[in-house]
Image (tube, rainbow, N blue to C red; front, side, top):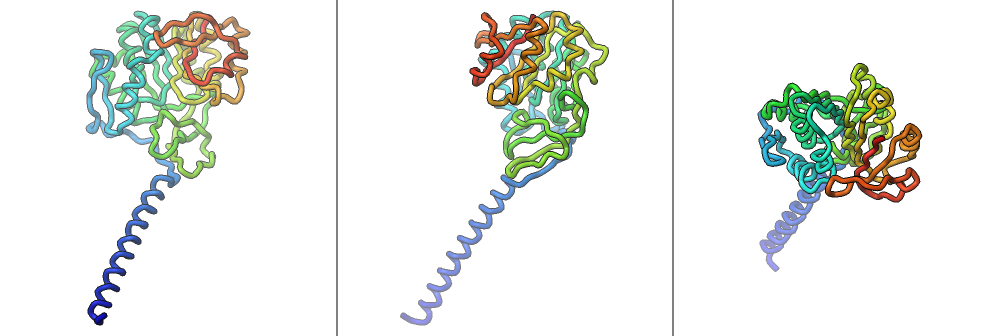
Length: 291
């Protein structure tokens, strides 16, 4: 073999190794970004990037460019048990408190159902999503009935974090204290946290408390104790998964005050009440708690 051929083979081998190294570096950087722990400030969204879509036939909603917004529209509106419950039970003049980490799909339905004389108080920890909700309210003429606040909700006030897996939407996140040790592969956004009773001390006779989170809602209910006591006809609707709950005492407390617990069916109806003991057998669903 000539010296020229040897040099060519070495050059090809070197080039091949260099390409492999570059690919490995690119993959390493990609994985680092995916699993890097980040804490982001809770900033305003970019209004100019919002796009308009239509839900429930005629309600316009403003979404941002992340794919989650489009998935959330489908999850929140089509074949959704809670949406059917709202259509069957909310009425003109009702007052609603909506605790959510989403972009306002059900908020807008509620605003339409309660009409001009109703009120929808929204608490959402993401400023970006609050911007989207406010923009949606404007284009539908709902400004006078939707009151959106960029706040996480719990049973007390503190500086906190909205923590969620990287590349997952905010609606999957959980509120944690500011000193929470964020696991690898998770990101967080700084949030202010308060309770419903602290934010709405003079509000009473609420018709619906809708808690739209993929996590334990116990502290939110505990932080609305006074509001619940001042609202004789209140109904509480929350997402439920037994594995998300550390204890079920908040449901026992409500049961002792005369509330009954129901599982909302796919058509929005609720029939036989469920005991607190039976809640542990419910893997996923939507609970209705009312007297």
